[in-house]
Image 1 (tube, rainbow, N blue to C red):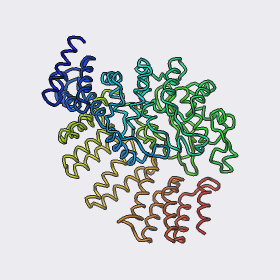
Image 2: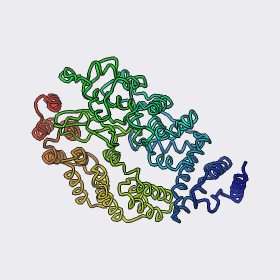
Image 3: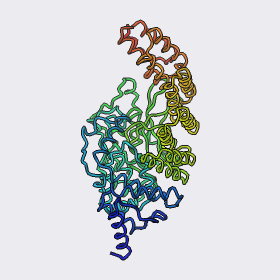
Image 4: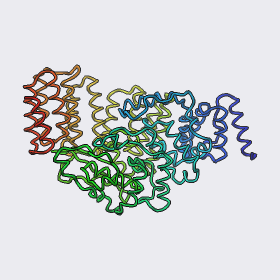
Length: 596
């Protein structure tokens, strides 16, 4: 042991004997070197991470409050310490709540998850911990990517296993390892990547993490990928490693599909479109085999074209996303991919003449819907810039202050965070939480909600989210008319370009008329439905039919009001004006037959 390391060990041991472990005075003034990180790990071995975490947290706040350049490093260390100190049973309870709140649980997940009382540090070997605590860039990417729905025991197990297998390769492809860890933490759902093939034919099974890591890293090392995977962030790479096809099929696709990146969209049209299946209404894959060579040989409909294109892209190291959406007269599937300029193209295989609502896609990290603003953020790539790093630092400090019940300090830090980067959604949420913790007046929080909505005006889903919360606050204060007006404005604003958001708002209004304390008499419900159809249903398409017309008619039939149901369907047909023979027309004819 070197004299310097011995001195560090004595210093830390002395601090422990004096009571609670503290970061030695002055350490926070500059980033820790390898020896000091070793000393911190030694202290954690003796005191436990729960004994070390408060001292690191206090040291990080000293660096933050004095404006040290080293603040980011120490805040990162404090976050690692807090994570590693958390007992697994407490984490699992919190994670289960997050899964239930986000509604991302599914049948392929385990029914029960272990709840040991050991800390999460048990999933991380000391060599990996030494590297994690010394890598500020990885730390920033890790905590920037982490979701409440990530199952940390599995995430940490995967990172540790990949590190143990080859530490040098792990360091080169750390972002690839992180992407695999957050995607492979729980199994994919039964409807992924689409529901028009049975699970017996497509098992919905991800490869072993080590197998996937080897496949993609080896391909990159040998120049077989269309992107340099070692240079991409985990937030992008998670759309490469989420391959539904087995590694053997990906290897086949890598050798057979030869389109350059500039023409990757043409991969979609390699699959011959089966008009016979479309005419017969055979939406489910009819064969007993659903592998890439079989699809290429036999052809398929749009979901099969999109599936083939996304998997073939992933096989060649291209981040790809499977989309599906609803247009005026039917449903369609297409795909998106990261092009050679590092820009996302989201319309490969999309039918330009159809007025499709914004496509739906799954986020492989959470298996929930991938939000529209996330797609925009991917393209804008602002999260790699220094301003966002500063915003994240202030957000992390605000969250630490909240944990210490120092709400005024949290408000100040969160305000700095949103000033550095107005698109930092977590910073806005932290600011609102901090204001609530200070018992700020409702009107002050409403002003912040309006400020956030204005700052995120370019992202309709975020703008609508914050404006809806503003309306909810108005309603809670008894300002019902103002709340109704705000909700109508949300719907009207999005009616032309984001009909899906307008329809969601209309569905909320209709649900309020049918259920709960605001439920209206039947005649008023019919009147409300009629107004909504006339105002928002003109040529609105399948999505309006699915979310407004069908639920309302189903409720009328359930309650024994078939005449009103027939009238409601006629009103919808007159507004939606489906072309004869289209999918929407067929569904409306079928529904009409049940009402006779």
